[in-house]
Image 1 (cartoon, rainbow, N blue to C red):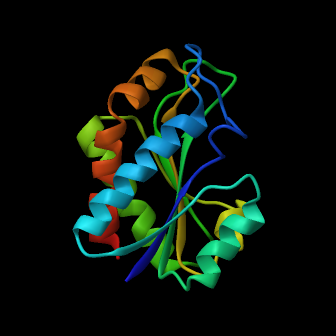
Image 2 (image 1 turned 90 degrees about the vertical axis):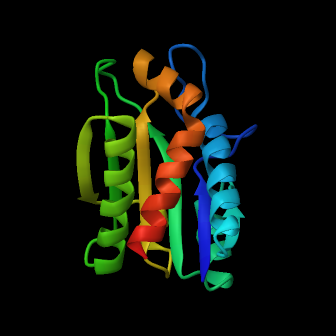
Length: 170
């Protein structure tokens, strides 16, 4: 089985959201995605890693590799600095994507005790233009001081949760 793991944004080029302490979303997603890749490969999965400022190239990489599943990892951000929690998106009509979103979201919420913002239908470019069942994980709000701290200190735990969720959901 081949799984594409996308570290949202592009570290060094497109920082994504930036936390109050200056932590870049692209840095956190890079760290989490690299651990997910390592853990999945340890379980015998073939993993395609992709991070690019071009979303079309991200999708094309997954599609060209004929991946069976696609996971995009992100950190959420909001004007309201009190916003917290984990939410995971799937493309409408994708039963496999919905199941995968639920298992990943549940693992993060259960293990890290983040606020459960649920699973939701999303129309993000990578969900719509990837051939494989796809999910986009918003691990926690980097715009919240406690959320940013959790992301920095527990990136490896987020990766373990995402990996367990993938294994359960596929």
